[in-house]
Structures are given as structure tokens and as C-alpha cells.
Length: 238
Image (cartoon, rainbow, N blue to C red; front, side, top):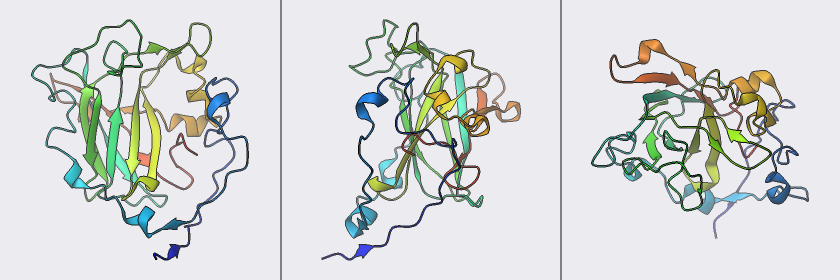
């Protein structure tokens, strides 16, 4: 029988740096947030060591969402890049980063998305990449569109890209969202504003990087992800 491994003690985040599990303005949290105190389950060797999530699961074009089909997708081509760092600023190497997003018209390629915006036959909206020795990742995609989501009257989500980060197993997964600078929908979005600390909320907003653009081809946005510590990126499962 595998021995139980003592859980790593995590630093408690400062108040309002991470979103609470229940947010009154975010309607679906009333249905899915826990009603009882959480129970800590120790992780054993099975949870820590398997299944391994590494480079063997990443294809040659998985990072480039614009070259996964016969034709090119419609929309503004962008590059999204950055580093995954620990709380001391050290690179997190060889970690699996996955993204998913709407197309340029604001529609997910998913049966549950009934938004009457056009689907793009050349855009699936999902990609994955491994961080390198410096913790760097890079995706090529199109800028996602805003979309209505019926949370409240005339509710629209700001343009965003979902990020999922894996360690070496499913139990080491973190999920967050990346937003774009100066979006006019920020003020009315309860998901974005569930992070009540303004400085922490700003860490969800990518930085436009003119120096990283590819001339006459794509714009570029930098989004660094910090897993722990004072400058940690807010995560959905805080």
C-alpha cells in the first residue's frame, strides 16, 4: 500500500486577493459553491505520480490555434506569451499549459454554447504547450470576442482566454483567466470583479507588448502567471 504524503502547507493569501467560492453577483456560484466546510484529503502516491502530464501529450501545432485546420481562422491574429513562476520568481519548468477561448465572434465550439454568433470552421479554440527551462510558454491565436451569458440583465463577458496549468498530475491543476487591457466590460463583469483587491485583479490583465509583435503579422500580449506568494495570479479554485 502506498504511503500517504504529508500535504505541502500553502501560504494563506491576503484577504480579497483570490475570489471567494460564493459570489452573490455571480449567479451560478449559488448552485455550485460548497455549503459545508471543506475537508482536506491527504494526497498519496497515486495522486502525486500519475497520470503524468508531459511533453508526450503535446503535438507540434498544439500551441498554434491558427494552424490546426486546413484554412486560417477569421479575426485579429495575436500571440500570447509569458512565464510561469513560483512565489520566489523562479521559473516553473516543464509544466503543461492549456488554453481555451471563443472565436473572434464570441462563440465557443461547444454544443452548450447557443449564442447566435457564427462558428468558424477553421478554429477550435483550444491549445496546449509546455513551459521551457525558463518557464516560458507561447501561443498563437486570434483575439476572442465578447459574448452574452445571461447572468444579469444585458450581461456580457469581457474578451478573455482561459488558462489551465498542470503540475505532474490532475490534482495539481490550477485555472485562471487572462483579460485584455482597457476592456469596457470590466466594470459590469462579476467574475472579473470577484477578485476584490484592485492590484490582484490587475494581475489578470495581459500587457500589450509592441516589441514582441511580429511586424505585419500579429500583435502580442504578455501574461506572466505566478503560482504562489505576494504577487500570485488569482485562480478560479482558490
